[in-house]
Image (tube, rainbow, N blue to C red; front, side):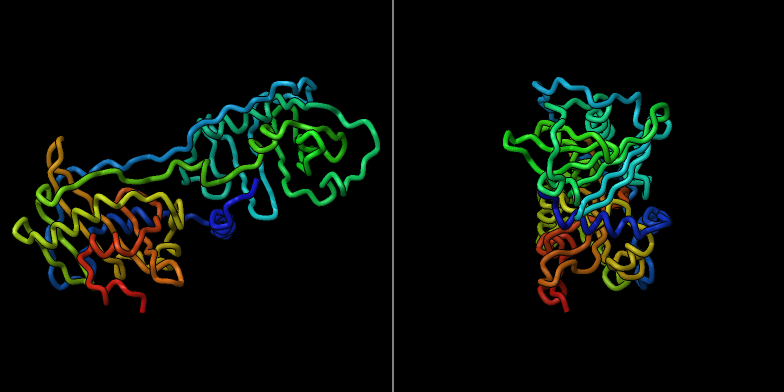
Length: 330
């Protein structure tokens, strides 16, 4: 039931972003020629489609939990708080949204699966005897959930420790105490990362598939053709390895782009054309600053996505044909 601290830090950062300005798309639309003394035409071929990463759905076995705690019609908002993360979601026009940054694409099936645990909350037993709340983990609970229903109002739940049978103590509205199955309790403890539909890439490009590439460094654009076999091989290897799965931001605003070195005046730009079974396709990739103290990870953005991915520097080195010196954190 531990959460990912990296994602927790991300959640805390998101809450500080009071206005999601949404200039990421505008920034990406500038096709990399900002400040360049040598302009090169960008590809007009259709862009390759991004892959959408979703977590697999999981079924909760709640057999043996026969005591109805409460039922709800349809949650319209809920918040989640722990020592490590805070989240807030709202249900609007049939869609679950992040209550802080609504542009972040949430997995609607996963959200419905998660909120299903609120619709009919069932417990293993109701605790009737006097118990020590501190020993049950209910005086300073690790997890707190508030759910609002348009018809039935607000329900608050705090999840405490396990009992001897392995079930979790839960207290409703600072009043009644129950035990619920561990599977249900764990389904009510959320990992934000698993709720987001993430932009990724899953392509395989051979050197001979490469048609043309433009790389812009420090405002200088250089065009490579099929005759530039060594460079094209490096770019093809970089594209085939570019499969983002870790992210610095799920919706990068102007400040985020600036802090990651991904604004039009600072970033590296690759615009590549390559052959596929469906014809010639193109992709534009941006690379920014190093993202870790070891200089092994760089911030990367793919045109068409508002997310900032974290990518191994060797992949970035291949994509942008960087020398070892160019790809070393200064």
